[in-house]
Length: 209
Image 1 (cartoon, rainbow, N blue to C red):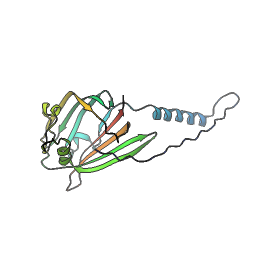
Image 2: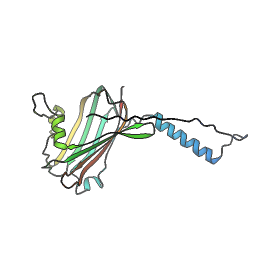
Image 3: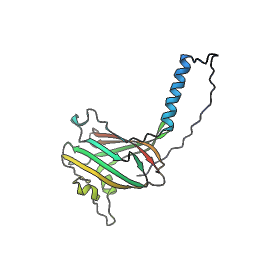
Image 4: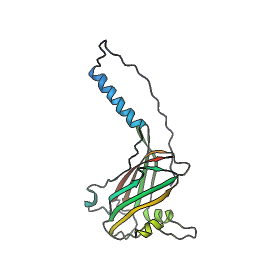
C-alpha cells in the first residue's frame, strides 16, 4: 500500500507570562498554563498504546454488519519496523458474504496536534486480498499463520467465528512511510446500494525501535 505524504509546517510563538508580586496567578492564567501542559504532554509523548474499535453503529448488533471483532491485541503495543510482532485476534463473520464488497481505507498521521490525511483508497475487497496474497507463480495463497488457524483470506466468506492465537509476523516498512502515530479507518460497503456493512478503526504507533 502506497501512502501519499502531505507537506506541512508548524510554527510556534513564544509568549511571556506576568505574575503579581505575591506570585499568585489569576484563574485565567492557571487555565491557560494547565492547558499548555496537557497539550505539551500529548504532543511530546507518543501514543504507544494499540487501539482497535468497531465504528459500526451498535457494533455486532447492527443488522447490516457483516463482521465484528471481539478482541484484537498486539505485542509489543508499539509496532517496531523492522521487527517481529505478536498478534492475537478473535472475530466473527456474522453472515455469509457471497458477493464482493467495496473496501474504503483512510490513513491519518499525527503531526504535532493535528491528524493529517495521508492516504485514501477505495477498491474491491476481493481484489485487494488477491493482490496482497499473490504468489510468484500468479496464484494466491493464505499466509501460513492464517491457514493454520483456519482463517479465510479470500472471497467468498462464510459465517462463523474465527480465532488467531498469539502468532508472530515479520514487520517491514517501505521507505516512503515515515515513523509516527497512525489512525486507520476501514469501511466495507455494498457496491450496489452503498450501504455500510462494516467499519473498524485502528490506532497504532510505528517506531524504529
